Length: 170
Image 1 (spheres, rainbow, N blue to C red):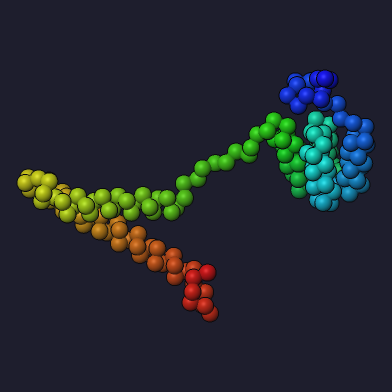
Image 2 (cartoon, rainbow, N blue to C red):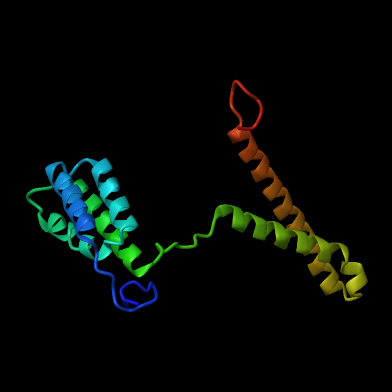
């Protein structure tokens, strides 16, 4: 068995001449009209299907560095295509940054408010010390305020989502 036929072999497969010719033809179409995104998409699909990533990885670099020939937006697009090829070569996924959403903070505050309410109600059963009881009573008031404000914000959000002509939520 030829090592290049084994998919697990570290020896890379040599692309066939027909695939290389088609890759060259598609690239020449891109060079004829670099602003046509459909040509770029066809090229990217072809190189991904035929495992020509190594050959394609060298194509976009000269276009990115040709500042006088292409607009900033076009070079930005070329850079994105180049980065896509590199990501496919090394099988990396785009980095996703976890952003703390406003709803996550709202739910956290709602939880804190509920805990304060529970401790405020259970205050007389927890301790006979008047200082602790007043602290828990203050926590009860704060919890009611937090929960009430959270509910108010949710109601306002629902009202802003309603259409003037259609009272149902979109």
